[in-house]
Image (tube, rainbow, N blue to C red; front, side):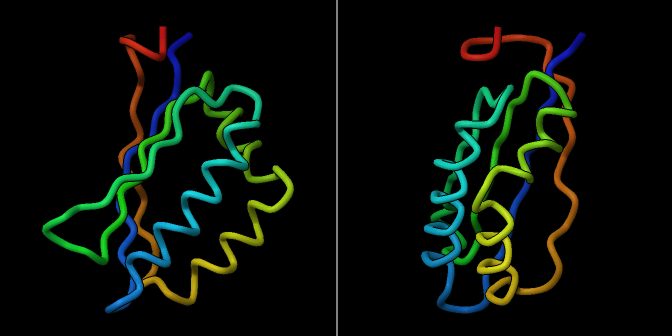
Length: 103
């Protein structure tokens, strides 16, 4: 069975990129306790200060889906939605083959 990965970008409204990044960093702390979470990495694009990248690795797609039920995660989603510049776009879904940190 292959591990499950996601890689995507969220873009905040003008001037709210740092706030979005902080919300996602809070989410990272919460989901790091979820079953099957291997990586939940938040990154900023220095060329676009309103964009925040999320890279996730999970033991399975089901573990990822279940992470939405971790207490506090839905509340953070509710905080992030109003500051997004448009609807979130579906990220890249990845079949993880292996590598450092996920083997």
